[in-house]
Length: 402
Image 1 (cartoon, helix red, strand yellow):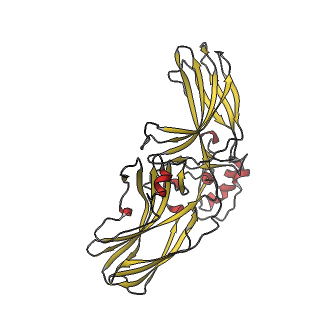
Image 2 (cartoon, rainbow, N blue to C red; image 1 turned 90 degrees about the vertical axis):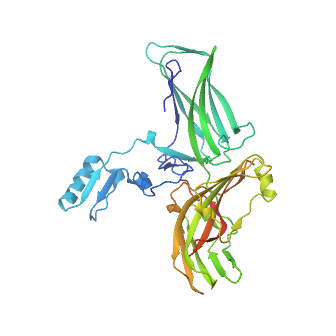
């Protein structure tokens, strides 16, 4: 984007080289900018899917079209017969790639060009122009002990020596071989971002700056040990259930499969829910807190207490420590309605791709400042609206970009 306000008429445009067409293994398109928020309508993301931008078909047709190699006129000619046979279709213009959101792999070099534009008849004297590349952990939304952000990458290069700008100039830049050890993450209280910054120094005046964020993702590898989860929980002489999930670790497009077996039922169960919970913990010295028992992988509960899956968001500051925890329910749905009987098996199948939120991999004490963990929360509600719940942590990892 262009930045020109309060800059003496100077407009700065930052571009990053590369597209999914030129670097298919290192760059992909995203539907939207990553966010911690849960979307209200899970189907809105399908309206502008990157693979459905050129043509939309409706009705009943059996035509197989090679859209990528056709012009609009050729498509109209081929679709003309379909309209006569009752097929509904529409042709949309291809989107402008420069306005689309792209994400880059961690090993892709950040390089591109800076365009400096001055209006006709205007002049800007400067004391030098620099281009910088930052990797930053921003904790302005949480507890930071006077340090709202921490830069784990800070590089600077001279773009132009001191002089004057009269017209439009385009200068290339590159930051090659930079190790990006963290993924881009935009959470409730903490964020990780990479960005290119241009700084125009001026005498007696504050510098003119412009920024362009570079979204980075890090594909992982499947954990070598991925054993199934099998636990027996319950209340003595009242309720005894056994739940089993096929594995503990899942990639972001995976399917969670399992089953719940009722071994003893002496209370009147009204229904059962399954929720996916994200727990973001941020603060200085997070790793030491976890080592001291600040968080456990499993949680339980009994009757009369509200389950964690029933909260949209929640904050808790641990005593004596500057640690803030944000708990967020990403998805909740009913898997059983009515009272079960002894020996009944309830199947579980949950598609992670269908969660109406931007699910990330599990982060363990990133830079000793924050962590993001995911839990499956099983909740049983009896006829007196008492809630019995059990949480089980799952490990998520990224298989592909996107």
